[in-house]
Image 1 (tube, rainbow, N blue to C red):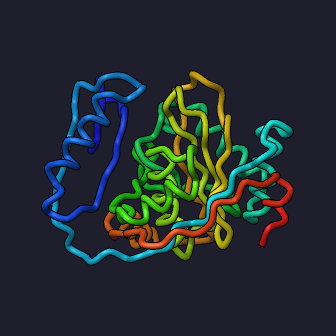
Image 2 (spheres, helix red, strand yellow):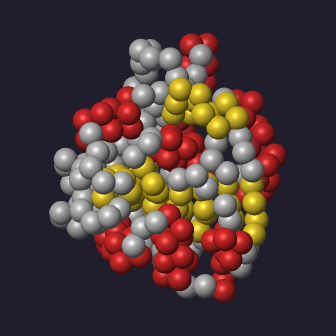
Amino acid sequence: MRASREREHISGAERIVPEDEISSIAKELTERALYHPKGKPDSINLKIELLEKSPIYLKLLDIYEIADREDYTIKEILTKLFKKAGIDSTIGLSIYRALISGASPAGTVMRGAMIVDCQTGIRLEPDKFRGIRASYMDITPEMEKNLKKLVGERFTPNMKDAVVLSTKVLNHPDVVAELCISDDPDYTTGYISIKNFGYVRIKNIKLPGLPKGGRAFFVKGKIERKAFIEYMETTPVLINEIGNYVFTPLSSIILGA
C-alpha cells in the first residue's frame, strides 16, 4: 500500500499473506492509510500480486533499547553507534543531517533510501530523488505474536515493520549498517542497525514536529549495484524466528559483542 496527498508520500506498508487473507489485509492496509497521523491522503494505491519466488526465511535482528537515553545527546549516541559499526562519525553524522533536512536534491524527503559508501560517504543510489526501496518482506503471524510478548507495551506496527525491514537489509552481505529516521512529524523514535549485532532503537532521534527523515544503507566498498537493488526491491523475505529484546545502558550496547 502506498498513500499520498498532492503527490507527497504519506504512508506505506506491505504484507505477505495466504490468498484467503487478502480481503481482510487489504481492508487493514486501507484503514492504516486513511487514518495516518500525517493526514488523510488523496490517493491510495493498493497492489496485490502473486510472489514469483519463494521467500528467504530469516531470524529477526536482536532489538536493543537504550535505558539511559536521557543521559546523552543524540550526537553522542550516534557517534558511539557509528563507531561500533565501523563507520567514521563524520560520514555518519553528515548523512544524519542530510536526512533530517531533506536528502533529495530538492531538499525534500526521498521516497526510498540512500546507499552510502561507508568508507568515503559517497552516495551510490542511481536516483537521488527516489532512492531505493526495500520491499517484499513480512513476519509470520506466530512470530508477530511472539514479538508482541517479547517487547510488551513498546510494540507498535511501526516498530514491527521497521525491524522486519532492517532484518532484510542487514542480511545483504555488503550492508554494514542502516540508519532510519521517520518522516512522520509525530514519530521521533529511529534506529541504527549494525551488522552482527542488532537493531538499536533511539528515542528522540529528531525534534518533534519535524516532517523530514529517511533511510540510509551503509555499504562496504564497491557493490554490484544492479544485484544489490534487485535484492532490496524484489527478493521476498519472511521472518520465522525472533531473537532477543534487551533494555540496557548505552555503554553495554557499545561494549556488546
